Image 1 (cartoon, rainbow, N blue to C red):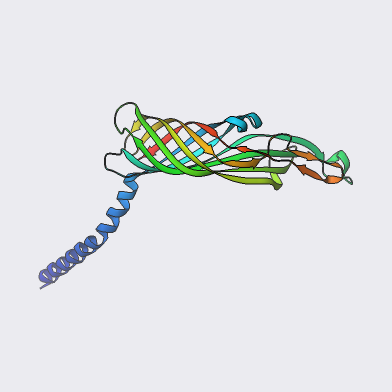
Image 2: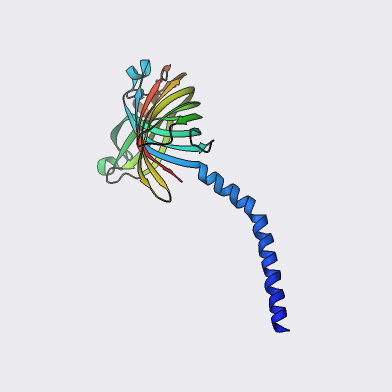
Length: 241
């Protein structure tokens, strides 16, 4: 009797387990399929302003992140979304904390200018070989903003900041590069060498000398205005399943 009861219990457990797995399988498959088709890249970048923008501001340096969703099994077509941030210069001056304190406590007033390029669009790549070229295109925008922050002269921790100016411009992009396989295991790591051109619309932005401190604590801000064409040089790595 005990053996029959144990047999029935095992049989019922097997049936329930099979039913549970049958219910869970579509969801797990869907999740693993998305993970299998996804990859991410992180790069250090240099921005090279073009045209009038290049006459008004200099080179910028920063980082860029990208997400790619593979659309076909071969890995030729992908949807790419990327966003970056570069600093293209600034200025710094030393000031006293207040008139009552005098020169006993000094602070650094640092002003930095930033560009945030972003785009989304298709990418076509050659998925095999030692050198795997790709080309991409997209639409997006470029954000420009300038920030001043107050920090002590003995450390770099900012305890107060102000956004002096911000603006945006619509943009289209086109780019290309190569992936060079570095490691193949459970995940695959590729070296990413690329370039991306942003054709940006007209925007107002600040450069060195655009902010003038006036007597009495007043500040004069004089933005520059032009089209915002920009080239991004990229050196990074892509991680994919």
